[in-house]
Structures are given as C-alpha cells and as structure tokens.
Image (cartoon, rainbow, N blue to C red; front, side):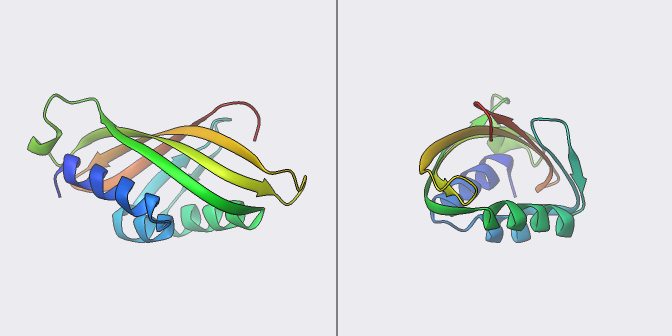
Amino acid sequence: MALASLGKQFVELCNQGKNFDVMRQMYAPDIVSVEAGGTETAGKDAVIKKSERWAATLTLHGEKVRGPFFSLPDPAATESGQFAVHYTFDVTPKSTNVRAAQEEVALYTVKNGQITREQFFYQGKW
C-alpha cells in the first residue's frame, strides 16, 4: 500500500475508534514503539498489549486524529517513508477521575507498506 493511502486509512480508522484494528492490520510483526520518555516496546503483540494496558487505565470519551502529515513531496509514489498524526483524547484517568483533554503527536515509520516504528511526543505529563 502506498504511504499516502496507508496514512489516510490510518487516520480514518482511528477517527472511527478502530485503533486496535489499525494495529492488527498495519503494524509490522517487528514494530518498535517508543514512548516520550524513551521506553521501547518491540513486537506487534507486545505493542498491542501495551496499548491495551494504557486503555484500561482510563475512560475514553472521544478521540480526534488529525493528519496524516508527510515528510515526502509525493507520498503516493512510495511504500516507505514517514507520516505524523496529532491526537486529542478526551479521557478520564481512573487514577484521578478528572476528565481532561490530552494531546500527543506520533511519528510513524513505514517500510514496504507496513508500520515498523511509532514514536510518541506528549504535551505535558501523562
């Protein structure tokens, strides 16, 4: 799948609340996920489990995903490259029970039509 198509489908599915479908369909078996603090998780199953643990710590009221933003002049011409997305989550962390908007930017690296790396950048403390 071309980088442009993959990025667009990624954002569309996330905006439908299908984030775990995205992971199962688009992530490479050897994906590496990097949190803002530098913690790395390797492997598709481990990355999905990490995300499931995060989701279990909060109530998600809504999510808006903007993008994709590309670093290539013609992302439709390649199956490899990078794209970024901006997330805004409307959440209530179970630890505080205080509803808030949380924002992050994620950079995704794509090789041969699969996401091989994700790296997160947060605004404020999570």
